Length: 627
Image 1: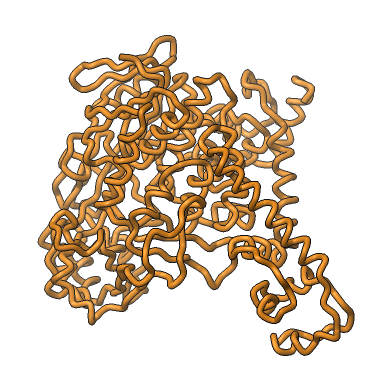
Image 2 (image 1 turned 60 degrees about the vertical axis):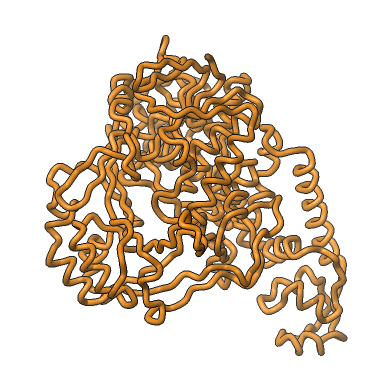
């Protein structure tokens, strides 16, 4: 049987890729090793977090599913950095790792354009550098016009604990043992990476009186722009905070050579995540710190149903120590002196490709119609995987439809930042999104993801007419409230109100728009004092208020982005020969030949390419191509 799109892997990237193609009515096959591991959360049972929560909202704005499923299944949610500037606010939900995969599988199985098949893909069918299908480990051939690889950590996966190395996936499943070797034969550069996970603890064996409670927010929140809150604030399940101790650090340092990463195994090639280090790494690298914080996070709702397990995820305690040392380490923590470990921690090493072998559409440069997304591209995290899966699915479908790919710019979305970083800079260790990676982060806020991206979702066919109309109505309401604020004046006669609000009295009348630039003045305060009348909802008020209070900074960021966009418009021909360019630095020549940037803007972001090299390149383009 032949399909239009074959998606390999049923993790968060695979789910979004398969649904994007199927929702665009392309006959799609999702091949996964175990149907019960679809949308699995093998590590942290959470969705969102710093920068990542914004990505989940971007996925939803474009028509993806992660945010909706998170809203349907989470057990706690909060807005991070709520008291800080809007550029770094982000949602984080404590997910239910039992219910989330079930709900996602239900959505996948209900799509008539999508079929799910269990199997391990070990090779690709290639003809004239164009993919035509996949080959399973039992030699079954399945044909498809486009293939999206979302293999996660399953390429030559090895579980590492102490001095043991076991060829298997996170739950003991069979990994793909030959696919990465076959990709290498096709010309892909293969990189070895690693990541880890902490122990899971029996909740009934923890003394929570020795820990600090961490509750969800007292305000209803959603990732999705289309769903009303589906939970009760009072029913949210709390997390708890504890810390390592001097005894914990002594146990780790005394047994460091037993850790897989520190001598337990001498053949480790993989590089671990810089921003999510093991507890061994933290104790060694930050030896001046007396303690490190650890979060006790429920993995699912508390239930007498044995399906849910009643397990606690020990966030921040990733390790590859032997089991007996893990027992000592856990029992040295306040509140966990008598804790029972239900699942021991481990590290996992796996193969990935160099993402510089990808186009901005996530189609590979080497094989036509072959797309990759998620950890195979060197990223870490469910959210980073899901957004790549969505973009790969969208662009695979657009390629079949003979349409131009959707490429998000760095000033449009964190998704654009992530993909541009991958294809332009590559990765040394598993890539994690951070707000600091986005130079235009004030433009890429939690509150405005729909305003930035919903129109793109509509144009590619993943946002319905009804959803799009609601988006257009929101734009009208933002303009309406903005105009009311500009037109409504306040005079010195109302200084008594300003004094009540601890604001400087006026000498001359000004608009409410300009008054709102004062940090102590808010739209809600103006309404409560009877100065302003509006029936705008809280989201409209929030958007307008941010736009007004940060107007100068937003305008500055917008102008900087426009300058960069002019460089993006200066295209570099695909047939350029960098060896012809005289006086360019040798490192710059090598990097430009490797990455083959499509624009001057992208070339400028390549590490090792300096402004002097760009100047020489632009002179060459002008002479050679009259650009």
